[in-house]
Length: 283
Ligand SMILES: [Zn+2]
Image 1 (spheres, rainbow, N blue to C red):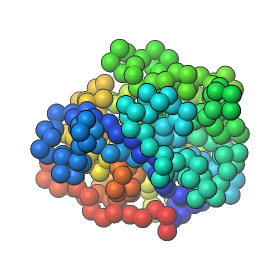
Image 2 (image 1 turned 120 degrees about the horizontal axis):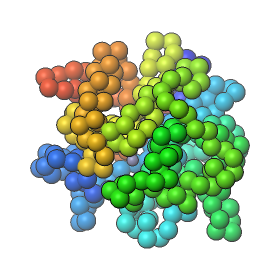
Image 3 (image 1 turned 180 degrees about the vertical axis):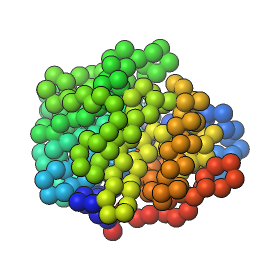
Image 4 (image 1 turned 120 degrees about the vertical axis):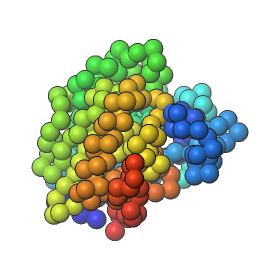
């Protein structure tokens, strides 16, 4: 699919698992377990699904999934699995090389979004995985990642973030607005301070990259909010506002963590929203 001048490639770059209870906050397991079956450790299957935008000049990657060079301990805790889908496969299927990526928009710096921003240079040291890219992060999120709260410290791996800054490839964005023609950044603060969600528009179509505001299609329901969110009531307000606009203006919503449905349009229903139709972006 093309939106404005951008050709879109969307694909998974890996799978991993997180605790099902943490993914749905106050929503009881009886409501979510049929759609998201849990393993023997109560973890549900998630994808790291990414979007690449190409207009002939720029190749813009949104988020990077988990780090290939994560420790074995981390890989085991989160059941990180790159056997079927990986960043390498993502790039080969897209036909774009690591060196060709000009920009990486990181929604936020949690390890399952920013981990793949770096890779092992062959000696065990981490370096930018996309050597020619500028990495765009909200200033507020970067500051938070450098000094997170005791509650969300486990979500940040500073050793995976600092090599980007040390290589001089970090661009700190201050607030919402247009980043490139046809790509606007929405900034939300309930999940973590300064999470940026790209909104791609052109030719009558709009695609919202849901990030961790709407990570799975189940999260279309406003009260389905992750326990990871630092300010769940803020998330509720942000979801109602953004999903309302998405329903009214027929936006497509991309789900970064949904292993089954990657994109859909939504419609309003009593007390919330529901999926209207699934969308295939790679056509
Ligand atoms: Zn996430």
